[in-house]
Picture 1: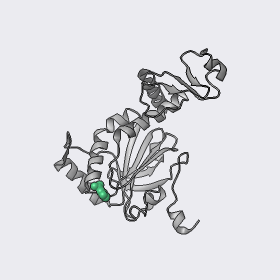
Picture 2: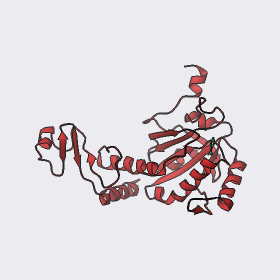
Picture 3: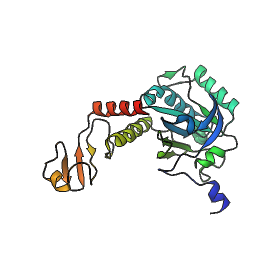
Picture 4: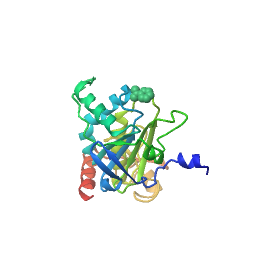
Length: 241
Ligand code: BEZ
């Protein structure tokens, strides 16, 4: 690989989250070690004092408790410096109203990355889009420090926060119940039973002999999991880490 290709290498789903130490608006961070036992959303934004990023930060901060209910912490990053971050977050709190949000305090850490060291490590710099700014990357990292989902958005489009929260719930549900989740799945909807192993043979399932399991074909079987079951499994997983 060329030096440039190495510099732009991207971690992938299933890889350990690259480790780094950095300065943040909440003090120093040792990542991902500081978050052992928790899920983390590590996300980048292109620049402080820009409108789309401002709308996203207000939304992240407003939803912080909802993410925490799923044992998930937020960590932001841009290639701006600490004093820019502090001034921008103060401006957000003191001056910005967006939709029904105002007086919004951002209490999760925002990493300063003026050298772009962390952004490069995580493949957040995409030169075709911008070589001096991070794109809107979102890394979902599990309690063992493994990257489980990556979503990228370009500079011009703000993230879909319903989807970010849905991914957190879906990852935790998939882990807790050893199932897969169909298109647009939401808690309370039927889940996909793995084809092999845990839940009867293919024939037993097709013959309707496995309670709750319904098959539309041998490879496509579903079962119900209620919202309450999802919530209680997630609470149990949170208690054991
Ligand atoms: C924004 O957050 O508004 C933004 C940042 C960089 C490029 C375009 C938009």
